[in-house]
Image (tube, rainbow over the protein chains, first blue to last red):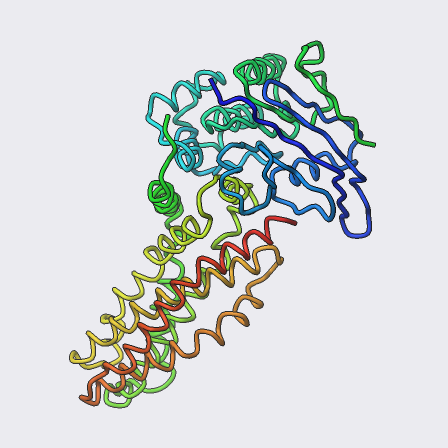
Amino acid sequence: MLPDRARLEARDINCWRGERHILRDVSFAVAAGEFLKITGPNGVGKTTLLRVVCGLLPAENGVVEWRGKRVSSSNDEYHTDMAYLGHLNSLKADLTARENLRFLAGLRQSLGDSDIDAALDRVGILSRGDLAARSLSAGQKRRLALARLLLSGAQLWILDEPVTNLDVAGVALVEDLVREHVVRGGLALAAAHQRLLDEEPFLRRLELN
Amino acid sequence: MQRASTMTAAGLVFRRDLTLAWRRWDEVAQPLIFYVVVTTLFPLATTPDLSQLRVISGGVVWVAALLASLLALESLFRSDVEDGTMEQWVLSGQPLGWLLLAKVASHWVLTGLPLVVMAPVVGTALGLPFDAWGTLVASLLLGTATLSVLGGIGAALTVGVRRGSVLLSLLVLPLAMPLLIFGSRAVGMAMDGDSPAGPLQLLAAIFFLTLSLGPLAMSAAIRISVES
């Protein structure tokens, strides 16, 4: 079980990109065992909001707090607790699927071969483990990025369009992974256009416009 | 599963870059080829007379090593920033400075160290006396290592700039001037039979200064680059 009482709170986030004021007084709170789905049309600032929550981007105004402490780009304690799946998969094309996990997920957790195989199996690409990432299909690359998320050992998942490029079974896989994570006491945030866990009791919604 | 230690993480970054270089060895060999070609051009353009070449041999090897190191620097962090790996490093919960230092270390092993190893061969071809080999190698060891860290800071600052190689040279070359001056001076003194300890100690001092401040500067610059 993951430790409880974890809470992520954002208050009055404002963010400008150049001249455009894209996030206006955005506030939300997510507690352990909840999933926040962020929706809104293209260009409304979903990715920007997620990057602010990660601490990758400073907000001009407002605060993000994790367990009551302020989030920033150099807050290693917070980053140990969170994992970010951006719209880039963060894969090295010349490395095999296994090596990609060993060299990137291995920065966070000491991983054995069995851990890596289990994660690859969970996302359904175990048989592709020794192929170079460049020869994986777009959907398989996304699955590999999901395997990295599984190996992160993080309590807070921040997902930017997690089901991009995935087939019907892949979407179901993301739903299962998030459901398991949340039921175990994790937190998840996702920007998504598609239906994603829409019927679940733990779903919270944030509409940006 | 257990939390990975900082040393484990830095070791993984180092090993990853060696693995990648092994699969892309043609790109890695470029600075070395450049270095050998430039130094062989000097006797062709000036004089094949070894007694005259000897006078400039130390300086030529040093200038060629400096330019060859710069050649490989521009792409140091670029692919990691573009494919999103750098974001994950920033968010890994590990001290970013250590990860970047590990990356610079692997870069030095792949580009700086071969230059140092080849230096006696290249120097001999230019008539460098055997007595000065040790000094040439020692000065280049310190010089290329310092340059890798300095270049790492420059590459981190210019990673967001398209075609940043000119900008990178403008940033790094002035800082590299002391290395060139002390390095070639050390070789010159050894050739004249004097003790090169003075300039070598200055090179060592610059190396440790750069090594201690470099990781801080690199991680600050990378954080700014990843923000955009």
